[in-house]
Length: 495
Image (cartoon, rainbow, N blue to C red):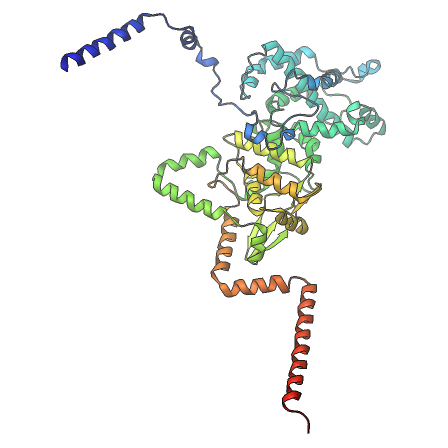
């Protein structure tokens, strides 16, 4: 046995020695020669391709209708028509929109824009979750120039049209086909809010700085920040109260792209009230906890977040009310106290559905994004189990939609939340859901209270049921009296 074992060892050694002497495959040589400083390790990703499972929920929410911005849909023939609009907007930005009156404008030199974009090309590529090796440097820079100039000019023109008191200036601006075609402006607003249809915000900001150094004569937007131009342009997708100002950080470096900026305008109010840890921070602290204790803690948190649907909550005596105060500003400010749940209105229509889905897709992909929209829709998923739940929320004004039936709303909410990852450790609604659960458990622990609430629900929920109950009681009283007098007369007849 010893000799056989020694022979086997010698055979293995000989085989490995022979394999070491053969030339290395080409792929091994290529990997060894790869320059690590050219590799993309994903540290700078801010623009992502939508995960397949989320994409299947509603494909139309993630595929642009008329315009491609950035490399994800670059070269797609479906958006060829808008390339002519991009070229026209570039000429307009350069000051050549009116050849007979070029002297009225100080315009930016195209070569200056080109040099700026070449300097940002490498940094811009690193922002995307794919490397796009088929796009050469020149092609990538040309795309950046055309797309960035179009976006900037669109934002400026929209601001000038909506703010100008000069009828002649307004008519000249509105004469543009993008404004005269009624459906096109809204389609652009929706397309430019898609996660796969973004340019890094620093690209737009640097171009905007270059442009405002050469201001148009009489231009209205010269003292307006790019942040304000962006919010004004996208506000119609989910309008806010004109009397309320959104308190955002004025530093452009705080924003990654247009989608990120517009999302921040909704989460800033609740973030000041209930700040959440970034996803990386929340997971980093878990390593100090014993695994078994961590599992038990997670299980208890999950149980506290599994609240009942609207129908069961109402049966338990919980009152659901619309919270109209600033609901279009602070859409996440859900309140619960002593059996009363107040929820801001959730608007569901052709504009808000794609917007919400792209916000959630960004939160699912970006490791530093706090999942406010994800938490909010998971909360609604807990409330909605059937069409009856949507009907109840619709009657109270908590959900407002334009769809033909509540069935589509219930399907959309439930389907979406089956495809997203939910973090129980990082939820701004934890306190409210815990309070709801405690109330619900206390209700089921008291049988007399259950019977009483069911009595109130079945017989005192409306004036008609109360009247019906009173009529039934009177009828029973008359019937009992008639029966009594009939029996009394039978057993004790008159003499």
